[in-house]
Image (cartoon, rainbow, N blue to C red; front, side, top):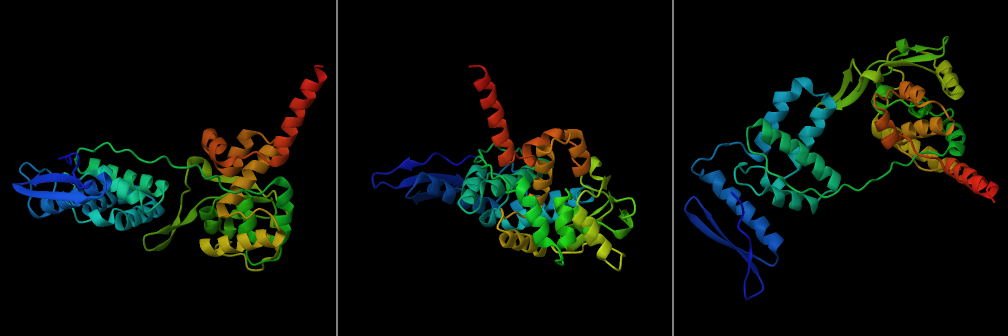
Length: 338
């Protein structure tokens, strides 16, 4: 059931007249938005305690999502299950115990946007939308705020040697250089010494370590089909660091995500270069390859990308020097036409 349209009173307040299951209630507030929000809460509360005639679903907002997660747990990755549970537990806080019938979902979205980012709301609604459909509930159409594009910082080509020097000899040198080599953080943490062939100068990427609902989980398969790959060791400093390790057993770099992030940022600050995060090093690898003119097919193979569109749209960024060079070529062309 929809929330009635608010009416403005002579006092300047906005009022909504509710009638649910024979009960009548008037809601007043200073703004239309606040009136609709309060009305949605009251209606949901009344419905939770007294089911409406013909109501089709007894699931609460939280219960609906939990049922969806459990039904799909076998086909979801541990990290996805973990993120879904976080959304189910922390989002739509005021509505968690309300039954899904009759809720004003647009009001729910609006309320959540006042608390968290557009991207968080979009992800949370994606889960709830899927959960409602799975429960057989008619999925309402809501308007989501546009998610702003936040580009991940990456290292310029001239900054990369400075970064390599800054991490040299540090306890986190190997995982940092593996990320700069194009590996995902989960692949770095899942890399085993048995997959490192120093004599051949290659690394076999096969498996990952991700965060699950109850801690770290080791996966035998990678994120995408192209993620399982054998790549050459391209950074001499990485070969040297791997050679220096005396005990080559188990995982190569069993380091925490936050610990590595803090270490990488400190190294960037110490070197006086762009401060990047774990994923920013993977972006730096892709952008450096593009800057050096390496074929897109080769970059996809090394980085484990299945989709060239994803690689272009998300990972490849033009370096400042590439932009300058491109502009100079255009200037030379027009200058020669005089």
